[in-house]
Amino acid sequence: MKSVQIQNADMAWPIAANIRHALMFCIQDQDEIDSRKILFHRQSEPFLPQTIKDVLPYFLGAIDEDLLRRKVQLDLERKELRKLQKLAGEREQLANLSGARTEEMFREAQSVGLIPPGQPPAQDIALSGLRAINPVIQEVPVPPDSTEPIAILRRERTSLRRELGVLKERLRQIRHVEDVAGGFAHEADEQRARLATLGLVAKGDVETCALCGSTDLHVPLVAEMHKTLSGIDEQLSQVRREVPRLQEAQGELVAKQNDVEDALKHNQGQIDALAKQDDAFRTERDSQLRLARTMGRIAYFLETLPPPPAATTSVDELDAARKRVEALEKLVDPENTAERLTSTLNLIGDYMTRDSEKLDLEHSGSRLRLDIRQLAVVADTLDGPVPLFRMGSGENWVGYHVLAHLALHRWFRQKNRPVPGFIFFDQPSQAHYPAEQDRAGDLSDLPDADREAVFKLFKLMFEVAVELAPNFQVIVTDHADLRDKWFADAVVARWRGQGLVPQSWIDARA
Image (cartoon, rainbow, N blue to C red; front, side, top):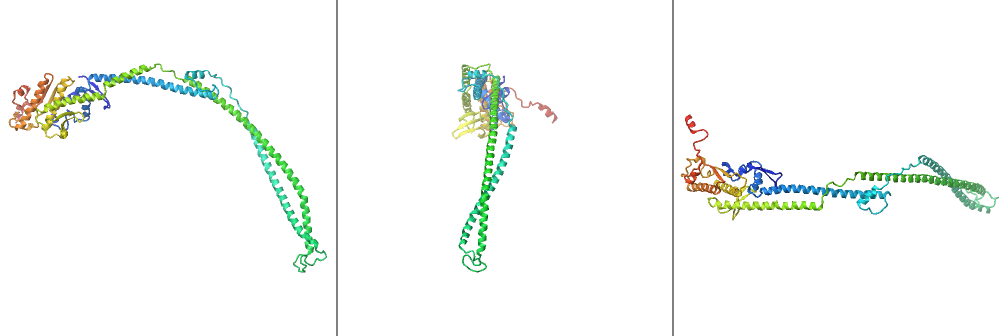
Protein backbone atom coordinates (compact mmCIF):
# COMPACT_ATOMS: atom_id res chain seq x y z
CA MET A 1 0.00 0.00 0.00
CA LYS A 2 1.39 3.39 -0.99
CA SER A 3 1.02 6.50 1.13
CA VAL A 4 -1.94 8.66 0.14
CA GLN A 5 -2.11 12.34 1.07
CA ILE A 6 -5.40 13.16 2.78
CA GLN A 7 -6.47 16.75 3.31
CA ASN A 8 -9.80 18.23 4.35
CA ALA A 9 -11.03 21.56 5.68
CA ASP A 10 -10.69 20.46 9.31
CA MET A 11 -7.02 19.45 9.04
CA ALA A 12 -4.18 21.83 9.86
CA TRP A 13 -1.96 19.85 7.45
CA PRO A 14 -2.38 16.77 5.21
CA ILE A 15 -1.93 13.20 6.50
CA ALA A 16 -0.16 10.48 4.53
CA ALA A 17 -2.45 7.47 5.00
CA ASN A 18 -0.39 4.27 4.94
CA ILE A 19 -0.24 0.68 6.19
CA ARG A 20 0.35 1.80 9.79
CA HIS A 21 -3.00 3.56 9.76
CA ALA A 22 -4.74 0.63 8.06
CA LEU A 23 -3.56 -1.79 10.76
CA MET A 24 -5.47 0.18 13.38
CA PHE A 25 -8.61 -1.42 11.90
CA CYS A 26 -7.12 -4.94 11.85
CA ILE A 27 -6.08 -5.60 15.46
CA GLN A 28 -7.96 -5.91 18.75
CA ASP A 29 -5.69 -6.56 21.71
CA GLN A 30 -6.98 -8.22 24.86
CA ASP A 31 -7.29 -4.89 26.70
CA GLU A 32 -8.92 -3.22 23.69
CA ILE A 33 -11.60 -5.73 22.71
CA ASP A 34 -13.42 -5.45 26.05
CA SER A 35 -13.01 -1.68 26.48
CA ARG A 36 -16.04 0.53 26.71
CA LYS A 37 -14.01 3.70 26.07
CA ILE A 38 -12.04 2.85 22.94
CA LEU A 39 -13.12 0.99 19.83
CA PHE A 40 -9.99 0.87 17.67
CA HIS A 41 -6.43 -0.33 18.07
CA ARG A 42 -4.10 2.27 19.70
CA GLN A 43 -6.99 4.69 20.08
CA SER A 44 -5.87 5.48 23.63
CA GLU A 45 -2.53 6.87 22.44
CA PRO A 46 -2.09 10.65 22.20
CA PHE A 47 -3.29 12.29 18.96
CA LEU A 48 -4.34 8.97 17.40
CA PRO A 49 -8.11 9.46 17.88
CA GLN A 50 -7.99 12.44 15.53
CA THR A 51 -5.79 10.51 13.12
CA ILE A 52 -8.35 7.69 13.03
CA LYS A 53 -11.11 10.21 12.31
CA ASP A 54 -9.03 11.67 9.48
CA VAL A 55 -8.02 8.44 7.73
CA LEU A 56 -11.15 6.31 8.21
CA PRO A 57 -13.18 8.17 5.51
CA TYR A 58 -10.42 7.36 3.02
CA PHE A 59 -10.26 3.67 3.95
CA LEU A 60 -14.06 3.49 3.74
CA GLY A 61 -13.95 4.95 0.22
CA ALA A 62 -15.80 8.19 0.99
CA ILE A 63 -12.58 9.84 -0.18
CA ASP A 64 -11.29 7.70 -3.02
CA GLU A 65 -8.22 8.03 -5.22
CA ASP A 66 -10.20 9.78 -7.96
CA LEU A 67 -11.36 12.35 -5.46
CA LEU A 68 -7.81 12.80 -4.23
CA ARG A 69 -6.59 13.24 -7.78
CA ARG A 70 -9.31 15.80 -8.38
CA LYS A 71 -8.26 17.59 -5.20
CA VAL A 72 -4.68 17.68 -6.43
CA GLN A 73 -5.90 18.97 -9.79
CA LEU A 74 -8.07 21.52 -7.98
CA ASP A 75 -5.05 22.74 -6.02
CA LEU A 76 -3.12 23.15 -9.27
CA GLU A 77 -6.01 24.95 -10.98
CA ARG A 78 -6.48 27.22 -7.97
CA LYS A 79 -2.79 28.02 -8.03
CA GLU A 80 -3.01 28.87 -11.72
CA LEU A 81 -6.15 30.96 -11.12
CA ARG A 82 -4.45 32.86 -8.32
CA LYS A 83 -1.50 33.49 -10.61
CA LEU A 84 -3.75 34.83 -13.36
CA GLN A 85 -5.73 36.91 -10.88
CA LYS A 86 -2.51 38.29 -9.45
CA LEU A 87 -1.30 39.27 -12.92
CA ALA A 88 -4.64 40.85 -13.76
CA GLY A 89 -4.73 42.60 -10.40
CA GLU A 90 -1.18 43.88 -10.79
CA ARG A 91 -1.98 45.17 -14.26
CA GLU A 92 -5.14 46.87 -13.06
CA GLN A 93 -3.39 48.26 -10.00
CA LEU A 94 -0.51 49.48 -12.15
CA ALA A 95 -2.93 51.04 -14.61
CA ASN A 96 -4.85 52.76 -11.82
CA LEU A 97 -1.68 53.93 -10.13
CA SER A 98 -0.11 55.13 -13.37
CA GLY A 99 -3.34 56.86 -14.35
CA ALA A 100 -3.62 58.62 -11.01
CA ARG A 101 0.04 59.67 -11.03
CA THR A 102 -0.22 60.84 -14.64
CA GLU A 103 -3.27 62.97 -13.83
CA GLU A 104 -1.52 64.34 -10.74
CA MET A 105 1.57 65.32 -12.75
CA PHE A 106 -0.60 66.79 -15.51
CA ARG A 107 -2.53 68.99 -13.07
CA GLU A 108 0.70 70.09 -11.37
CA ALA A 109 2.13 71.06 -14.75
CA GLN A 110 -1.03 73.09 -15.40
CA SER A 111 -0.73 74.82 -12.03
CA VAL A 112 2.72 76.24 -12.92
CA GLY A 113 1.79 77.16 -16.48
CA LEU A 114 3.68 74.42 -18.30
CA ILE A 115 0.45 73.13 -19.85
CA PRO A 116 -2.69 75.13 -20.71
CA PRO A 117 -5.54 74.78 -18.21
CA GLY A 118 -8.38 72.35 -18.83
CA GLN A 119 -9.65 68.88 -17.98
CA PRO A 120 -6.85 66.26 -18.08
CA PRO A 121 -7.15 64.05 -21.19
CA ALA A 122 -6.73 60.27 -21.43
CA GLN A 123 -3.58 58.79 -19.94
CA ASP A 124 -1.70 58.25 -23.22
CA ILE A 125 -2.44 61.81 -24.39
CA ALA A 126 -1.52 63.21 -20.98
CA LEU A 127 1.79 61.32 -21.07
CA SER A 128 2.52 62.73 -24.52
CA GLY A 129 1.83 66.22 -23.20
CA LEU A 130 4.16 65.70 -20.27
CA ARG A 131 6.93 64.37 -22.51
CA ALA A 132 6.56 67.42 -24.80
CA ILE A 133 7.36 69.92 -22.03
CA ASN A 134 10.50 71.99 -22.73
CA PRO A 135 13.01 70.98 -20.06
CA VAL A 136 14.84 74.35 -20.20
CA ILE A 137 14.49 76.21 -16.92
CA GLN A 138 14.93 79.98 -16.71
CA GLU A 139 17.56 81.31 -14.38
CA VAL A 140 16.15 82.09 -10.98
CA PRO A 141 16.44 85.90 -10.43
CA VAL A 142 18.60 87.09 -7.56
CA PRO A 143 16.91 89.98 -5.74
CA PRO A 144 19.04 93.05 -4.79
CA ASP A 145 20.17 93.23 -1.21
CA SER A 146 17.80 95.69 0.49
CA THR A 147 18.84 94.84 3.99
CA GLU A 148 21.14 97.85 4.52
CA PRO A 149 18.84 100.48 2.94
CA ILE A 150 15.93 99.29 5.01
CA ALA A 151 18.10 99.33 8.12
CA ILE A 152 19.13 102.96 7.41
CA LEU A 153 15.51 103.95 6.84
CA ARG A 154 14.46 102.29 10.05
CA ARG A 155 17.18 104.10 12.01
CA GLU A 156 16.05 107.35 10.39
CA ARG A 157 12.49 106.53 11.34
CA THR A 158 13.51 105.95 14.93
CA SER A 159 15.22 109.36 15.02
CA LEU A 160 12.18 111.06 13.50
CA ARG A 161 9.88 109.43 16.01
CA ARG A 162 12.13 110.62 18.83
CA GLU A 163 12.13 114.18 17.42
CA LEU A 164 8.37 114.08 17.00
CA GLY A 165 8.02 113.06 20.62
CA VAL A 166 10.12 116.03 21.76
CA LEU A 167 8.04 118.45 19.68
CA LYS A 168 4.80 117.06 21.01
CA GLU A 169 6.05 117.44 24.58
CA ARG A 170 7.05 121.10 23.99
CA LEU A 171 3.69 121.80 22.39
CA ARG A 172 1.98 120.24 25.34
CA GLN A 173 3.97 122.44 27.74
CA ILE A 174 3.30 125.68 25.78
CA ARG A 175 -0.39 124.87 25.53
CA HIS A 176 -0.41 124.19 29.24
CA VAL A 177 1.19 127.59 29.94
CA GLU A 178 -1.27 129.23 27.59
CA ASP A 179 -4.15 127.53 29.35
CA VAL A 180 -2.82 128.62 32.76
CA ALA A 181 -2.33 132.22 31.55
CA GLY A 182 -5.80 132.31 30.11
CA GLY A 183 -7.24 131.01 33.36
CA PHE A 184 -5.26 133.55 35.35
CA ALA A 185 -6.44 136.41 33.15
CA HIS A 186 -10.01 135.30 33.55
CA GLU A 187 -9.74 135.19 37.34
CA ALA A 188 -7.90 138.49 37.44
CA ASP A 189 -10.58 140.16 35.31
CA GLU A 190 -13.22 138.98 37.71
CA GLN A 191 -11.28 140.28 40.73
CA ARG A 192 -10.66 143.64 39.05
CA ALA A 193 -14.31 143.95 38.19
CA ARG A 194 -15.19 143.47 41.82
CA LEU A 195 -12.53 145.94 43.02
CA ALA A 196 -13.40 148.48 40.38
CA THR A 197 -16.43 149.43 42.38
CA LEU A 198 -14.00 151.10 44.78
CA GLY A 199 -14.02 154.07 42.47
CA LEU A 200 -17.29 155.02 44.11
CA VAL A 201 -15.50 155.58 47.47
CA ALA A 202 -13.84 158.93 48.22
CA LYS A 203 -10.08 158.71 48.16
CA GLY A 204 -9.61 161.07 51.13
CA ASP A 205 -11.42 158.85 53.56
CA VAL A 206 -8.86 156.16 54.03
CA GLU A 207 -9.46 155.39 57.69
CA THR A 208 -12.90 153.98 57.36
CA CYS A 209 -14.20 150.79 55.69
CA ALA A 210 -14.99 151.37 52.05
CA LEU A 211 -18.07 149.16 52.33
CA CYS A 212 -19.65 149.91 55.71
CA GLY A 213 -17.79 153.08 56.98
CA SER A 214 -16.56 151.28 60.06
CA THR A 215 -13.36 152.43 61.76
CA ASP A 216 -12.55 148.90 62.97
CA LEU A 217 -8.83 148.19 62.44
CA HIS A 218 -9.50 144.63 61.21
CA VAL A 219 -11.53 145.77 58.24
CA PRO A 220 -9.52 146.37 54.94
CA LEU A 221 -8.84 150.02 54.33
CA VAL A 222 -9.67 151.73 51.08
CA ALA A 223 -6.01 152.44 50.40
CA GLU A 224 -5.12 148.81 50.64
CA MET A 225 -7.84 147.82 48.25
CA HIS A 226 -6.68 150.45 45.73
CA LYS A 227 -3.17 149.01 45.97
CA THR A 228 -4.42 145.47 45.28
CA LEU A 229 -6.37 146.66 42.26
CA SER A 230 -3.29 148.31 40.84
CA GLY A 231 -1.32 145.07 41.26
CA ILE A 232 -3.95 143.10 39.39
CA ASP A 233 -3.90 145.57 36.52
CA GLU A 234 -0.13 145.19 36.23
CA GLN A 235 -0.33 141.39 36.16
CA LEU A 236 -3.06 141.46 33.50
CA SER A 237 -0.90 143.71 31.39
CA GLN A 238 2.04 141.29 31.60
CA VAL A 239 -0.14 138.28 30.70
CA ARG A 240 -1.54 140.05 27.66
CA ARG A 241 1.98 140.85 26.48
CA GLU A 242 3.11 137.15 26.74
CA VAL A 243 0.15 135.58 24.92
CA PRO A 244 1.26 136.59 21.38
CA ARG A 245 4.75 135.20 21.99
CA LEU A 246 3.26 131.87 23.22
CA GLN A 247 1.07 131.66 20.14
CA GLU A 248 4.02 132.36 17.86
CA ALA A 249 6.11 129.62 19.54
CA GLN A 250 3.20 127.22 19.30
CA GLY A 251 2.84 127.89 15.58
CA GLU A 252 6.52 127.21 15.00
CA LEU A 253 6.30 123.92 16.90
CA VAL A 254 3.20 122.83 14.96
CA ALA A 255 4.99 123.56 11.69
CA LYS A 256 7.99 121.50 12.80
CA GLN A 257 5.65 118.68 13.90
CA ASN A 258 3.99 118.64 10.49
CA ASP A 259 7.40 118.50 8.81
CA VAL A 260 8.49 115.58 10.98
CA GLU A 261 5.21 113.70 10.33
CA ASP A 262 5.63 114.25 6.59
CA ALA A 263 9.17 112.92 6.88
CA LEU A 264 7.86 109.84 8.70
CA LYS A 265 5.29 109.23 5.95
CA HIS A 266 7.97 109.54 3.31
CA ASN A 267 10.22 107.22 5.30
CA GLN A 268 7.46 104.61 5.59
CA GLY A 269 6.79 104.88 1.88
CA GLN A 270 10.44 104.15 1.13
CA ILE A 271 10.41 101.17 3.48
CA ASP A 272 7.18 99.86 1.91
CA ALA A 273 8.59 100.28 -1.58
CA LEU A 274 11.69 98.30 -0.70
CA ALA A 275 9.58 95.61 1.01
CA LYS A 276 7.27 95.43 -2.02
CA GLN A 277 10.27 95.10 -4.25
CA ASP A 278 11.56 92.27 -2.06
CA ASP A 279 8.16 90.56 -2.17
CA ALA A 280 8.04 90.81 -5.94
CA PHE A 281 11.51 89.30 -6.30
CA ARG A 282 10.67 86.63 -3.73
CA THR A 283 7.42 85.76 -5.53
CA GLU A 284 9.26 85.49 -8.82
CA ARG A 285 11.97 83.38 -7.24
CA ASP A 286 9.42 81.07 -5.58
CA SER A 287 7.57 80.72 -8.87
CA GLN A 288 10.76 79.77 -10.69
CA LEU A 289 11.73 77.33 -7.95
CA ARG A 290 8.27 75.74 -8.03
CA LEU A 291 8.50 75.49 -11.79
CA ALA A 292 11.91 73.84 -11.54
CA ARG A 293 10.70 71.46 -8.85
CA THR A 294 7.65 70.50 -10.91
CA MET A 295 9.75 69.86 -13.99
CA GLY A 296 12.08 67.71 -11.92
CA ARG A 297 9.14 65.69 -10.56
CA ILE A 298 7.76 65.24 -14.08
CA ALA A 299 11.14 64.09 -15.38
CA TYR A 300 11.51 61.62 -12.51
CA PHE A 301 7.96 60.35 -13.04
CA LEU A 302 8.57 59.74 -16.74
CA GLU A 303 11.89 58.00 -16.04
CA THR A 304 10.48 55.70 -13.37
CA LEU A 305 7.16 54.97 -15.07
CA PRO A 306 7.03 51.13 -15.04
CA PRO A 307 6.35 49.36 -18.30
CA PRO A 308 3.21 47.24 -18.62
CA PRO A 309 3.56 43.58 -17.48
CA ALA A 310 5.18 41.34 -20.05
CA ALA A 311 2.51 38.65 -19.57
CA THR A 312 -1.00 39.91 -20.09
CA THR A 313 -4.08 38.07 -18.95
CA SER A 314 -7.17 38.25 -21.09
CA VAL A 315 -10.66 38.23 -19.66
CA ASP A 316 -11.45 35.00 -21.52
CA GLU A 317 -8.38 33.26 -20.09
CA LEU A 318 -9.30 34.33 -16.57
CA ASP A 319 -12.92 33.23 -17.01
CA ALA A 320 -11.83 29.84 -18.35
CA ALA A 321 -9.56 29.26 -15.34
CA ARG A 322 -12.33 30.30 -12.97
CA LYS A 323 -14.79 27.89 -14.61
CA ARG A 324 -12.30 25.00 -14.33
CA VAL A 325 -11.91 25.69 -10.62
CA GLU A 326 -15.66 25.92 -10.09
CA ALA A 327 -16.21 22.61 -11.90
CA LEU A 328 -13.60 20.83 -9.79
CA GLU A 329 -14.97 22.39 -6.60
CA LYS A 330 -18.33 20.84 -7.33
CA LEU A 331 -16.70 17.44 -7.78
CA VAL A 332 -14.80 17.67 -4.49
CA ASP A 333 -17.55 19.44 -2.59
CA PRO A 334 -17.19 18.54 1.13
CA GLU A 335 -20.94 18.08 1.26
CA ASN A 336 -20.69 15.35 -1.36
CA THR A 337 -17.94 13.67 0.66
CA ALA A 338 -20.01 13.97 3.83
CA GLU A 339 -23.02 12.45 2.05
CA ARG A 340 -20.93 9.53 0.80
CA LEU A 341 -19.50 8.98 4.27
CA THR A 342 -22.96 9.08 5.84
CA SER A 343 -24.26 6.61 3.27
CA THR A 344 -21.32 4.26 3.88
CA LEU A 345 -21.72 4.41 7.66
CA ASN A 346 -25.44 3.70 7.28
CA LEU A 347 -24.69 0.52 5.32
CA ILE A 348 -22.08 -0.54 7.88
CA GLY A 349 -24.68 0.13 10.55
CA ASP A 350 -27.06 -2.18 8.68
CA TYR A 351 -24.43 -4.95 8.78
CA MET A 352 -23.97 -4.44 12.52
CA THR A 353 -27.72 -4.38 13.17
CA ARG A 354 -28.28 -7.57 11.18
CA ASP A 355 -25.39 -9.46 12.82
CA SER A 356 -26.39 -8.27 16.31
CA GLU A 357 -29.50 -10.44 16.06
CA LYS A 358 -27.17 -13.47 16.17
CA LEU A 359 -25.75 -12.40 19.55
CA ASP A 360 -27.44 -12.00 22.89
CA LEU A 361 -26.41 -8.39 23.54
CA GLU A 362 -28.09 -5.66 25.56
CA HIS A 363 -29.40 -3.75 22.54
CA SER A 364 -29.67 -6.54 19.98
CA GLY A 365 -32.37 -5.66 17.50
CA SER A 366 -31.92 -1.90 17.96
CA ARG A 367 -30.64 0.22 15.14
CA LEU A 368 -26.82 0.24 15.41
CA ARG A 369 -24.45 2.71 13.84
CA LEU A 370 -20.79 3.64 13.86
CA ASP A 371 -20.30 7.23 15.08
CA ILE A 372 -17.06 8.47 13.53
CA ARG A 373 -17.07 11.63 15.62
CA GLN A 374 -17.14 9.71 18.90
CA LEU A 375 -15.32 6.66 17.50
CA ALA A 376 -17.93 4.49 19.14
CA VAL A 377 -20.79 2.12 18.41
CA VAL A 378 -24.15 3.75 19.13
CA ALA A 379 -27.48 1.99 19.57
CA ASP A 380 -30.53 4.07 18.63
CA THR A 381 -33.28 3.10 21.06
CA LEU A 382 -36.72 4.41 21.92
CA ASP A 383 -35.10 6.22 24.85
CA GLY A 384 -32.50 7.89 22.66
CA PRO A 385 -28.99 7.04 21.48
CA VAL A 386 -26.87 4.81 23.72
CA PRO A 387 -23.11 4.97 23.02
CA LEU A 388 -20.77 2.10 23.80
CA PHE A 389 -19.44 3.61 27.03
CA ARG A 390 -23.00 3.63 28.45
CA MET A 391 -23.62 -0.01 27.68
CA GLY A 392 -23.14 -2.38 30.61
CA SER A 393 -21.07 -5.59 31.01
CA GLY A 394 -17.95 -6.87 29.28
CA GLU A 395 -20.07 -9.19 27.13
CA ASN A 396 -21.66 -6.19 25.41
CA TRP A 397 -18.36 -4.37 24.97
CA VAL A 398 -16.70 -7.41 23.36
CA GLY A 399 -19.74 -8.16 21.24
CA TYR A 400 -20.00 -4.64 19.82
CA HIS A 401 -16.26 -4.51 19.15
CA VAL A 402 -16.56 -7.73 17.14
CA LEU A 403 -19.69 -6.51 15.32
CA ALA A 404 -18.08 -3.18 14.39
CA HIS A 405 -14.86 -4.68 13.03
CA LEU A 406 -16.57 -7.48 11.13
CA ALA A 407 -18.92 -4.92 9.54
CA LEU A 408 -15.99 -2.67 8.61
CA HIS A 409 -14.07 -5.52 6.98
CA ARG A 410 -17.15 -6.70 5.13
CA TRP A 411 -17.26 -3.20 3.60
CA PHE A 412 -13.48 -3.11 3.02
CA ARG A 413 -13.59 -6.38 1.10
CA GLN A 414 -16.72 -5.54 -0.89
CA LYS A 415 -15.18 -2.25 -2.00
CA ASN A 416 -11.65 -3.67 -2.31
CA ARG A 417 -10.28 -0.97 -0.06
CA PRO A 418 -6.52 -0.81 0.75
CA VAL A 419 -6.84 -2.46 4.18
CA PRO A 420 -5.21 -5.82 4.96
CA GLY A 421 -7.76 -8.64 4.65
CA PHE A 422 -7.68 -9.89 8.23
CA ILE A 423 -8.87 -9.01 11.71
CA PHE A 424 -7.08 -10.21 14.84
CA PHE A 425 -9.08 -10.73 18.05
CA ASP A 426 -7.24 -11.51 21.29
CA GLN A 427 -9.31 -13.24 23.99
CA PRO A 428 -12.81 -12.40 22.69
CA SER A 429 -14.32 -14.94 25.16
CA GLN A 430 -12.73 -13.36 28.25
CA ALA A 431 -16.04 -11.94 29.50
CA HIS A 432 -17.41 -15.51 29.78
CA TYR A 433 -14.27 -17.63 30.03
CA PRO A 434 -11.46 -15.83 31.92
CA ALA A 435 -7.92 -17.17 31.63
CA GLU A 436 -7.76 -18.06 35.33
CA GLN A 437 -10.67 -20.51 34.81
CA ASP A 438 -9.03 -22.23 31.86
CA ARG A 439 -9.65 -25.98 31.90
CA ALA A 440 -7.94 -27.07 28.70
CA GLY A 441 -10.46 -24.98 26.80
CA ASP A 442 -13.39 -27.03 28.03
CA LEU A 443 -16.58 -24.96 28.31
CA SER A 444 -18.72 -27.68 29.84
CA ASP A 445 -18.44 -26.19 33.31
CA LEU A 446 -19.66 -22.77 32.16
CA PRO A 447 -23.25 -21.74 32.71
CA ASP A 448 -25.45 -22.42 29.73
CA ALA A 449 -25.84 -18.71 28.97
CA ASP A 450 -22.09 -18.09 28.92
CA ARG A 451 -21.42 -21.21 26.88
CA GLU A 452 -24.12 -20.18 24.38
CA ALA A 453 -22.74 -16.63 24.18
CA VAL A 454 -19.21 -17.89 23.42
CA PHE A 455 -20.57 -20.26 20.78
CA LYS A 456 -22.58 -17.53 19.05
CA LEU A 457 -19.63 -15.12 19.08
CA PHE A 458 -17.25 -17.63 17.43
CA LYS A 459 -19.96 -18.81 15.06
CA LEU A 460 -20.48 -15.23 13.83
CA MET A 461 -16.73 -14.82 13.23
CA PHE A 462 -16.65 -18.12 11.35
CA GLU A 463 -19.62 -17.22 9.13
CA VAL A 464 -18.18 -13.84 8.16
CA ALA A 465 -14.79 -15.43 7.42
CA VAL A 466 -16.45 -18.01 5.19
CA GLU A 467 -18.58 -15.32 3.52
CA LEU A 468 -15.59 -13.16 2.62
CA ALA A 469 -13.10 -15.98 1.87
CA PRO A 470 -10.59 -16.21 0.33
CA ASN A 471 -9.94 -12.45 0.63
CA PHE A 472 -10.46 -12.24 4.36
CA GLN A 473 -9.60 -14.21 7.47
CA VAL A 474 -10.32 -13.89 11.17
CA ILE A 475 -7.38 -14.63 13.47
CA VAL A 476 -8.31 -15.44 17.08
CA THR A 477 -6.18 -16.33 20.08
CA ASP A 478 -8.30 -17.61 22.95
CA HIS A 479 -8.45 -20.10 25.81
CA ALA A 480 -11.85 -21.38 24.73
CA ASP A 481 -11.75 -24.54 22.64
CA LEU A 482 -15.14 -25.54 21.22
CA ARG A 483 -15.80 -29.17 20.38
CA ASP A 484 -17.75 -28.38 17.21
CA LYS A 485 -16.29 -29.69 13.98
CA TRP A 486 -16.32 -26.31 12.20
CA PHE A 487 -14.33 -24.88 15.12
CA ALA A 488 -11.87 -27.78 15.25
CA ASP A 489 -11.28 -27.54 11.51
CA ALA A 490 -10.49 -23.83 11.89
CA VAL A 491 -7.93 -24.32 14.67
CA VAL A 492 -4.41 -23.78 13.33
CA ALA A 493 -2.43 -24.52 16.49
CA ARG A 494 -3.00 -25.30 20.13
CA TRP A 495 -0.31 -23.67 22.22
CA ARG A 496 -1.51 -24.82 25.60
CA GLY A 497 1.56 -26.22 27.41
CA GLN A 498 3.82 -25.18 24.51
CA GLY A 499 5.16 -21.88 25.75
CA LEU A 500 8.47 -20.34 24.83
CA VAL A 501 9.94 -22.18 27.84
CA PRO A 502 8.81 -25.85 27.59
CA GLN A 503 6.87 -27.16 30.56
CA SER A 504 9.28 -30.12 30.81
CA TRP A 505 12.07 -27.70 31.70
CA ILE A 506 9.98 -26.21 34.45
CA ASP A 507 8.98 -29.67 35.77
CA ALA A 508 12.62 -30.82 35.72
CA ARG A 509 13.65 -27.98 38.01
CA ALA A 510 10.77 -28.54 40.42
